[in-house]
Length: 128
Image 1 (cartoon, one colour):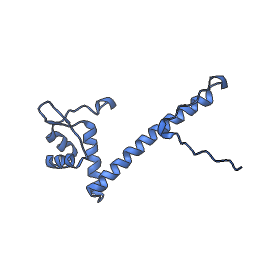
Image 2: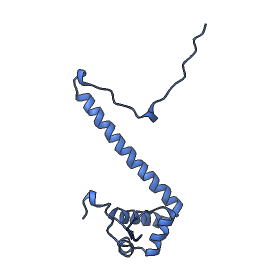
Image 3: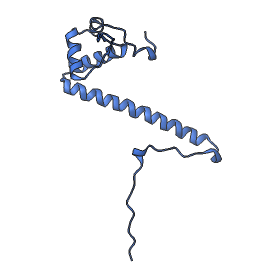
């Protein structure tokens, strides 16, 4: 239905987004107050929901139907986002490794590390 780059366009008013997700508009407002959802706003401060927002609402609904409270839902959504990030980073590292293994030895360059990945170990003192 939507191209991936169109999924973030703010298209739906709250009533339409609520209907698409099978919820009451007040539920969407409550989820926004809880920080589970952050719809975009127009210049006149009207909420606009994207297709991705509607998908998130459906995921929240699935989790609550499984018996999770909103704190549990929030935790699961956070862990799912972390998992997506880690999977994306793993794919990038795998691609770098693939390119590294295919390159002739004279064309190999080191993969730069982010500063947070560098571990500084204390120097050992030599015994006299």
